[in-house]
Image 1 (cartoon, rainbow, N blue to C red):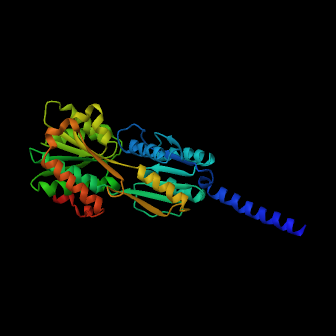
Image 2: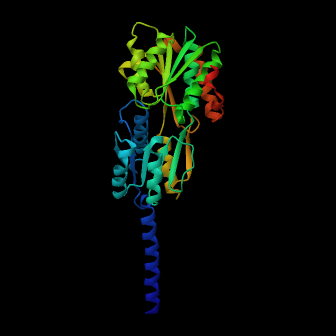
Image 3: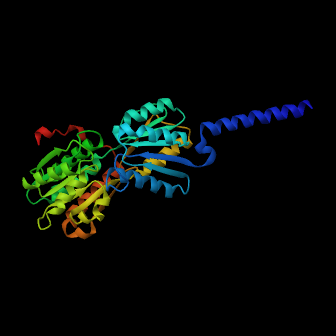
Length: 340
């Protein structure tokens, strides 16, 4: 009888431990990982927000049914808290605030709900133990765009339409400058910022100003860049071109002006997040994106082969190979706009 009681007690203890593990880490217990995405624009903005949405869908395909995904669009940081609370109440394991503007919200929620993993980017910060950050080393993609711009321009004048001078946008812009200077040190680079990630109208106005000043190839990052591309596309009979920060730009109506583009492959971030969660790591790390770890992809526009076939294509391929073998090697922070 005593042996039977001891056996039952042992079984109960084991069951209790198992149930505790299930409560602490429901993702591992069920095999499903519930991911919520908070974005300020839409999943089809041909830019920043679509890139993350597409990355989650890619990870969903790659991990074959492990992900349950939901998204809240057009969420200003001041309004996003209610959406986060709803996801937490529904048992979501990972909540992503896609943009540095969500930093404070994610950190506040992480403190209040320590059993949920939160993530935001772009940021190189190391957050609390249940918060991940992610940082595209976008000087690499900017550098490729700069190589193409510097070798394509006929007027030795290029334009850069930035959102704000911070985060991955700052890295992309300065990488662009380095790329232009590497192949065409005589080229003049015009840099301007709209002050917004989503002001399409302002981006279009900046692009028009740069074109009137002589720029014959432009670039820009974040969702606001779509406004600049639309302005470039309005110059139908003028040899003014675009290099993009999202491959989706090649395939839209205005894409006939887009020579090439890079994209963030956020699928790499999502897969890493799930791998970390499976290993019991809930946060406290920054996940980088670069060409070496598959965090970036690049494509030329097949319809514009006459522009890039030959020296430009070769230079880009050589540079891509270098980035794949030696990531994080560009000293982007040394670029001083005042000396351009």
